[in-house]
Amino acid sequence: MRYTATTKKTLVRGGSIVTSSGKSESDILISVTGEIEELRPKISVPKNTEIIEAAGLLIYPPLIDCHVHFREPGLEYKATMETEARAAISGGIGTVLDMPNTIPPTTTVAAFADKVRRASKVENCIIKFFFGVTEPAHLAELRKLWTGDSLELKKLKQHCCGVKLYLDHSTGNQRISGGIVEEVFATCSELEIPLVVHCEDPEINAATRKSVTRTDVSAHALLRPPESEERAIEQALVLATKHSAALHIAHLSTKAGAQLVRAAKADGLKVTCEVTPHHLFFTTDDYSTLGTLVKVNPSIGTLEHRNALWQALLDGTIDCVASDHAPHTLEEKKVFPPLSAPSGMPGVELLVPLLLSAAAGKWPHPTSAPPADFGLEYSDILRLCFLNPNRIFGLNAAEIRKAGPARLVLLDPRADWVVTPVSLHGKCGWTPYESWNLTGKIIQTL
Image (cartoon, rainbow, N blue to C red; front, top):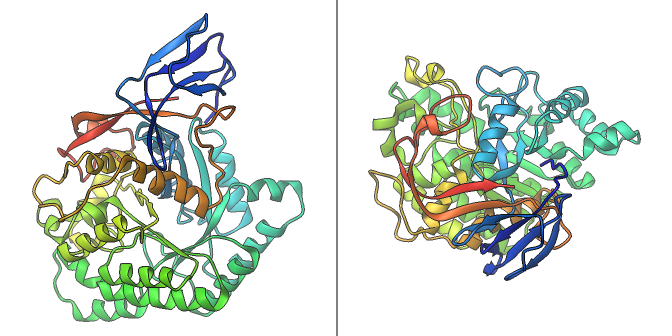
């Protein structure tokens, strides 16, 4: 976020700062240069000070969404960095990590530099980028970016949050050539680069395409079955173990996948993972009403998988919640036959409100019953959407502290509201969460 000097100090009065251990009531005095000058209860109001009344509000640092597709360059008709950054900020997100499947893909230093240049024009939202690898030449480009001595390369490297690997095709067809998968693990281990893997097995997916004859949209869950993720995670864990690589599994979606991650952590492996809100709140039952709007990769699972993901979230197996924000136009989604529709949905703006609803004890899905236990603490949201992604990807995002930057999100945990497309800020203009009743709303971002 960017700040400009003002002629007045600002006092945020009466709010509760969310910490890793709970909530701490504190006033926050912000200097004219945008730094936190004082941080304690009941600060006396200095002269020439603007007051923001925050009684009853929770205060977070701007949160982190570690998995987004902002579509620029090449797909600006779906979204741009500017439009989706506006959506992120409106949803309490101040830092996003963008994936490489754009046009051109982010697989060269030149393409990476172009993205950094574009992001420099976006105000208030920090955008960092994953580097993609699908062939040996891309691995050479990665090494150049990560180890180059020039000032330009050193500056570019600061905007790189890791490497993204697709073990099977998803939107953008970025599946890696099988022969260099192990070399990517070895390189990321050597250079200490975070490695994010989209875990679906191409052989299992190819076999199901031959055997599944149904053409309705719910067949998507059969075409990309749970066994595909399970096998891919097993293979990724073998390589991570062999090369001591720091492995992060994207959008965990299955019960068996969660069990594998849980066991790997118990064995001391350097493995972390994320889950999306759509895998936490939707099930295959939603195909009947939402159709292609909930067509995503990996596919939405059954109730059994959804409940297992909540269990993994609550027991600490899952490290992050990320939106996998992947906007498409409504016209693209409503094509026939439905299985030809692109996979993905928008989600960055509703990531935090959905979790706030769970923290308030409110199950937001209007037609499905909740799992036996879905309760989050407000401190869990800080852990899942700030502390853990900040650590895993080495982002150095600032926490709320004296003498630090006044990057604050004020939200009302009690506010009830209904999701409507017109109330959201992304470019695509639709959401699968339309008409959901949520509890918890962002009031202001400083």
